[in-house]
Length: 368
Image (cartoon, rainbow, N blue to C red):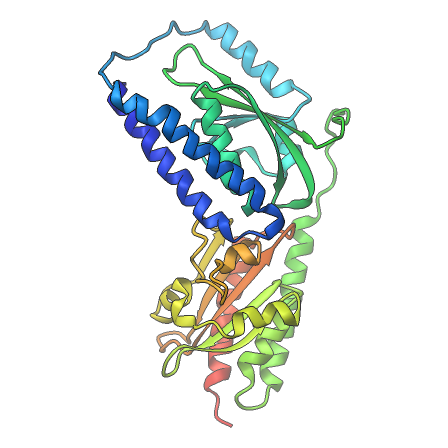
């Protein structure tokens, strides 16, 4: 890889980190110092690294290295997986390349799901920009770093992330090795894993069937014109932390907002649904949308303070479904949020919600 290509990638990575910092400016006031420190750090990086690099830019050949022996590679892989400390290997953009068994247990994220996704996506919104900046600095060879972050599934527990650079012999770039541990606590001893009965899926399926039954009952007994509001109250709490209902005839109108509290719900009641890209897409006949750890903070618009709704509500997963009978026009849109440590919406739940949305649409069209 030429120096020109490397500089181009570094510059593109810097632009992405700046975009994340812009999205993080709406975090709570107590988290702003962390975001500000990250922004100052990025400015120093431009002045001290990118600009001098641009001035002395010349083309160079690829940096090569002798490949390690196959046996040694297998040994190191086994050691990595057996470490009792949660350890992850990231690329320069903080994308997970590998994580060991202890990291899977510590984060609650399966290896197959985490690999290829940015580690920052599993962190609280307030920590993402700072983590990306520190990981990029370590990948550039600017020294080891350590910072406190919060996992989305356990936002109340601070986690100490220690980052150090590694240069695999067969690769031209540094990778980042990240060790995680509870902040201020020693890591507990990791005992051999024992298979335990797992009834989670069975329990969730039973709860989903109960929800469908409750929805059917509510729709059959709803007074004329109250079907959408009844459906929103059935879904709130037991299925979603937030329920936002918008009608689409003739134009988009917000009718119901149910949140963790009445005060929080008022933040979205005055929002124009036409400013919510997800709602607009669904109202135009789009398919149901399921997003886990939404990548775009502005996908559901902004509240009256200018803050992205998904950041303000700490949304970890969302479902948006158009309310339309088979072959009929869209009469409304339901959007559901889950936040904090609550399990993300599953594909089975999304499919059930798609079915319930058609039933809601039929109830909305029923004559008085």
